[in-house]
Length: 342
Image 1 (tube, helix red, strand yellow):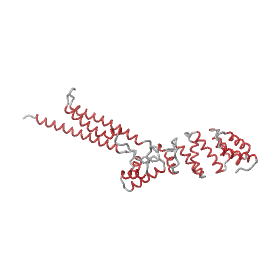
Image 2: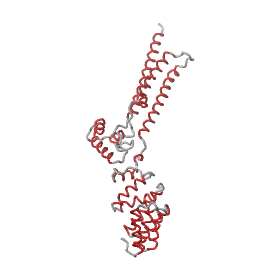
Image 3: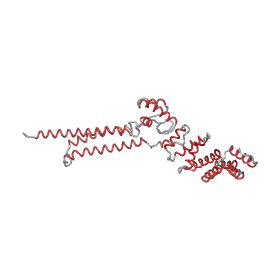
Image 4: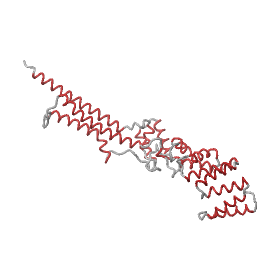
C-alpha cells in the first residue's frame, strides 16, 4: 500500500500548523504593539500619568504635571488624592475637566494623522495573514520555486520588517509625547505672578544647571528682597551673578542687589562699592547702580564729592522719570548742605 496519501496528509497538517503558528506570532506582535502605543511606560506612576494627559488651564500647551503654576499644583494635588482614594483614571479626569474651566485632554484622538498609528496593529495582522495565504497558494508563480526552508523564512522575515517599522514609528510617537525631561519645558519666567515661592524653589532645584532658570531665580530673589529677607534672597542673587548663562541685564540686577544688601544688611561699605563697580563695568549706564553707589558713598564712606558727581550724572539721563529726577535733585541739595543721609 502506498504511503503517498499519508505523506500528503502529514504535509498538509504540517503546513496548517505552520500557518497557525505564524498567525499566532503576528497576533502576539499586534497585541504587544497595542500595549506599546496605549501605555506610556515613561510615566509609571498613575498621578504623573494622569497629570501628563491634562492641559494646564493657565499655561501655553503644558500639562499640569509639567507646569509650575499654582493652579496646576492644586490640580495635581486633587489627582493624588483621588488616586489614593482608589478612583479610576477616567473618573478622575472627568472630574478635573468638569471642575477646572479651560482644562482639556492632551492625548491625541484616534483620528486624523494619529488614526494610522492606532490602526497599525490591526493592519499589520491583516497584512500578515494575506501574505501567508498568498504565499501558500502561489509557491511557484512567476518565480523559481524556492527551497522549503526559504518558503517558511521569507514571509516571516517580511512580517518582522513590517513589525519593526511600526515599532519605530510608535517609539517616535511616544518620545514626542513624553516631551523634555526634568520639567525644563515648564520654566516660564515671563508669567510668574501666580507661581508660589515653593513651586519656584522646586523648579529651580530641579533645573539648577538650565540657562533659563536665572530669570526665575531673580524673580524669587526679588520677592525675598522686597520682604527684606536678605538671607533667602542672597544665594539666588549670588547664583545669578556667577552664572555663565546670565544676560548682562540679569547679572547687573544681581550685582546691584548684592551690593545694596551688603551695605544695608551688614554695613559693608567696601564690598558694596566693589559690587556696584562690577555692575557698572558691565553696564556703565545703569541708573540703579550709580544711584545706590552714590547712596553708599554719601551715607557710608562720607565721600560727598563723588556722591554728588554720580547724582549729577543721573540727572543727565533723559529717560529718568520725573519723580525720580525730583528726588535726585533734593538729595543733591542735601549733600551740598552737608545734611546727613536718611
